[in-house]
Image 1 (tube, rainbow, N blue to C red):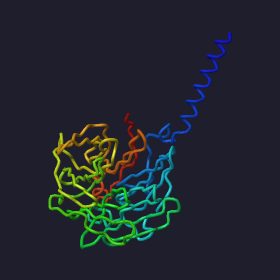
Image 2: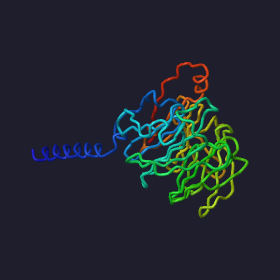
Image 3: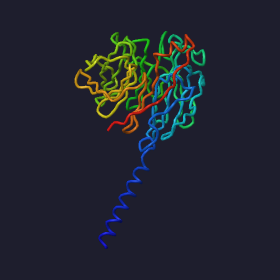
Image 4: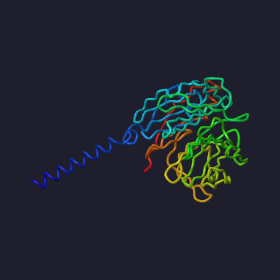
Length: 319
């Protein structure tokens, strides 16, 4: 009888330990929704970023602004109202939790059928306080035509930005108020988009129109050779790119969410799931969230006045 009671006690303690462990996980990792419908104020999302607790932030090309979705829930609330602080159509987002900053790309997207909520010209990068939403910094991209697309951060907190309208990657060092050109190369002219640092310390980018991937060598903060990588299959409108374990996750406008593993000058593209015109991607533990931007329908919705589709953040779990 004593042995039976000890066994029962051990089982109860194991169950209790499991319950405590699950409760300690972020809601989005332990349970929470696997899909989130965005409100009509967040049409044609472009980018999604996340915090460690599963909180999500999503931008909008059509409406501007930034929506915030707390971890484990499916309700979006405004973090940045459309047009606030001179923002227009919002593109790339990147949360820097260590420094309490949300980086936001704002652009004039009239050329692709999204005039946005204001008449602000040019491409801009703005930094907001993650806790309060207060504006911390606003910097315009240099030169004539420019479009701030997506972001990466190095270990020192310097921000790297892809310029879709020029074959260049810009850098904003901590404390700086103007961009410097980190690298400019004619091979990057086919619509720079996704950007991320690899575990090797080098910078990786893709081109939306060219369907290409490149590695930019980085040594002591200085750009080195730009190398086009071979891919195991053709890429169709590659977009959001984020670090994931020993490689990356990437979405393509054609629908694919894939793992990317680089070896030498080759990138292996491994399928994970398919979505509706994905544009942005972020990782929360084992869960990968994707913004379904459906940009192929943006021009038609603008010109014909046809009803826009519904928009979602959807996820896939990866072990």
